[in-house]
Length: 617
Ligand code: F6R
Image (cartoon, rainbow, N blue to C red; front, side, top):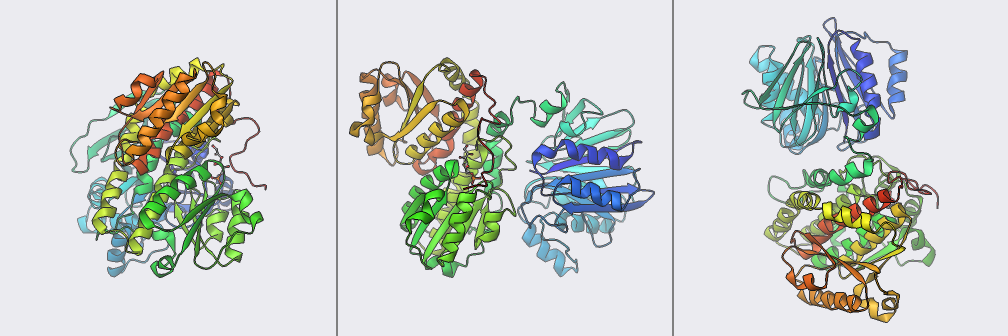
C-alpha cells in the first residue's frame, strides 16, 4: 500500500508533492521519491527510509521546484526497501518516470522480453517494466501521446496497480491509470492533483473525482480527461470531500481499525496476486527454499505471538491435512526455553506481521542455531525476521496502523494456506488440479469477506447491547477453536474485558461451571459439509450451555437451520470449505470487539498498554 501524489499547476510542484507525501505518511514508509519536470528537464530524487531522508537529500541537492511533479512513498512488495528500488523508476533514456502502487503479476515475463530487446534494469521492482514499456510504446507511436501509450501498456499488464507517469518531452501532462488499486483526482482552479487518497490534496481542493476500474486519466492544469483502456470516455464519480485532514487519512472512518477491517477483501486479494505461474503451478517467488530442501522436511514448527500465533494454529490444520507432515505450533516466547527438538529436517515457520517481535525474532535465531530452516511469513518487507530467515513469504496487507491486527491476520491465513499447498505441490502429494481447486476457492474469499462486511450491522448492535457485560466466552472446534481464541483476544485488548476461548469439547471438563444466567457465549460453528461430526457435536454444546442460561451468539454458515432454535443471536457467514472458514468467521468477531470497545469509549487504534510492534522480550 504505497502513497502516490501527482500535481500539475502553477504552484511549486516539488513543494506540493512532498507536502502531499507527508499527508500520506500513515500509509507507511520504507522509501520515498519524487520526479519533477521543469523547464523541459526531468529530475528525480529517491531515498530509502522515512520521508525525512528524501527531504534531506532534496535540501543537499536542490531541484527546480516549478513545473509538474509526481511523488511516491513505498511499502515494498517486489525488491527490498533500498534507494535503487525506491520509486520513481525511469526508462533507459531517462525521459519517462513512473511510480506505482500494487503488484504487476506478469512482470517477470515482461522483464525477460524487455531484457531480450536490450533494456537495462536498475532495480528489482516490478514497476520498472512499466517505465521501459511506456518508453518503447512512445517510440513506436512516434508521437507524444503519453495517455495512449499508457492505455496500450495497461492492456498488457496483469495484477493490481495504480500507475502514474510523466515524460520529459511532454510538459504539463501527468498520466495515471488504475486497476484494483485506489486513485483519486482533485480538481482545482488552473491546477489538478491526483493521489492514492484525498488526504494528499485536501489542503488545496475538496472537489474530487474517483476513478473507476481500468481507467486512465490525463491531467493538465485546466483539464482532466478520463477514458477506459480503449480510449472511450469513461463514467466517473465526482464528489465533495467534507472530511478534515485527519479523517481523510482514515478514508472518512473515525479509526484506522474500522478502515482496516473494511480493507480486508483487497488485502486478501493482493496476498493471492502473482502466485500462480503461466503453467498453472503455484510459485512463491520470495520463498528462497529449494523444492529439494522442502522435500526433506520431516516436521514443521510454527512460532508466533498473539494474533499471529492464532494464524499458526489454523495453519496446522491445513498443513497436516494437505501435506501429512507433523506440525507443532508454539508461542514464540516459550519456544527456546523448553529445549525443543530441532534439526536440519525441521522447517520452522515464523509468523510475524511486523517482522520485529522480539520473542519471535529470538525464537527464529534459536531455530537457525539448531540448523533448522526458517521461513518467515511477514507483512513488512525488509524487517528483521525475514532478513534473518532462510526464506520469506510476504503478505500484502499494506501497512496496518491500528494496534489490533485485523487485515494482517486474514492475509497471514492466506499465506499459510499457500505454504501448505506449495509443500503439497513440491512433495507430490496433490495433483495440480486439486491445488488449483483450492486456489480457486481462495480466490473467491475476497468476495465472501465483502459479503460478511455487508451484513455485520446486527453484530454492531449486539456489541453495543453488551457494553456492560463483565465477561464473554468463546467456543469453537477444529479451525473454529483458534478463531474463537482470536475473538477473545480482540475483545480483551480492545474492550479491556475478560474474555476466554475454549475448545467446545473441553466445556464438560470444567469450564461449563462458569455458565450462568445471561452469560454471553459466542460459538463458532464448523461447516456442515466435510466435518459433519464436528458440526453435530457443537450443536449439542450450544444446547448444553443454553439449557444452563447462557445467552448464545452463534456464528454459523448461512442456511444452517439446525442451530437457529438454540441461538439467541444468529450471525450468518457464507458457506465455504471447512479449512478456509476462519477467513470469513473471524470478521464478525473483529467487528464485535471493535464496536463493543467503541461503545465503552475506548480508543481502538491505540488500546491502553499495547504497542503495535513489541520489540522487548
Ligand atoms: C493482537 C496483536 C498482537 C500481535 C502480536 C504479534 O491484535 O496484534 O497480538 O499479533 O504482538 O505481533 P507480530 O505479528 O508483529 O509479530
